[in-house]
Amino acid sequence: MPHEVVFLSDQDVSGMFTMADAMVAVEDDFKRQGVPESMIYGVPLSYVTEDRKLGYRSRIKSAIIRDLPVAGVRVTGFNIDQNGVGTGGERAATRYIILSDPVTSSPIAIIDEHSSFSKRTGASVCVAAKYLARPESATVGIIGVGNVGQAALQGLHALFNISDVKATSLRPQSREKFAHEMSHTLGLRVRAVDSYEEACRGADIIVVGTSSPEPFLHYDWLEEGVFLAVVGEHEAMNDVYVKCDRFFVDYNPASEKHPAHIQHAVDAGAIGTEDITGQLWEVIAGRKPGRRNAKEKVLVASVGLTTQDISIAYQLYMRAKAEGLGMRLPF
Image (tube, rainbow, N blue to C red; front, top):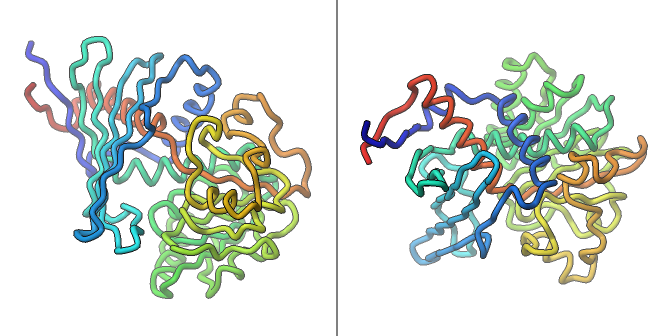
């Protein structure tokens, strides 16, 4: 029988992959990080090419997950402005995972990740909240109402008894639409509010996912016992990094570059690498304690892990292969 490559479109993926699937895959991957020899990352972690005149950036990341086993390359391409700002969240952007069998070296799948990417990003926040937010958390603030904000709220709704959600964004129409749609979808009280501060005040859990070019979130807006997750590049002011009681990241500061927003805080002398409490996998694998009391303010900065994208893609590939989903390409 000739070798074939499975192709899954965004439509295929959105119909076969749920937020619950994403949270299971992400939590499993965090636990897997407790066994370093199970994974190999590309070095450097990311290969980037950009042309600000044309307004385009491409990025390639790779990893091998030995215990599955699978090798994967994540390819993205998206528009940027003259300052180099762009998120790649738009539907027109290029987003694919290419999977190979590391034993034979043959390709096995090409998977569109538009749907799975937003769910993975939201799932990382939700899994962190599972271990680091107060169990009785009931009020959620959402800043940034795109696909990641939607996915995060869906996941948090499954984990916590949420009674009130405050959502905001730059455009009034987008936050009003988010509030209406998510209220209907989840059966929750979701309100559109006019400012970042209003979304934060009184919130037990805050999720921030924006393309803001400048930080805007102040420590004084945070309530006692809050869980704050930032997933964008420029969101929290330096005082947030300095004053929060505990600060977790999902990457390895010892071997990987800080994302821009954390590097800015380091360069300003606000924090040092020693001020990072630890990596999320350490909490999830039981190496470090989760939330210690109801008063501490916990900050999580999530940049997203290539191994999570690849393990999710492998999960989708295995299901497509078993159920005959997607398209088969000759090889």
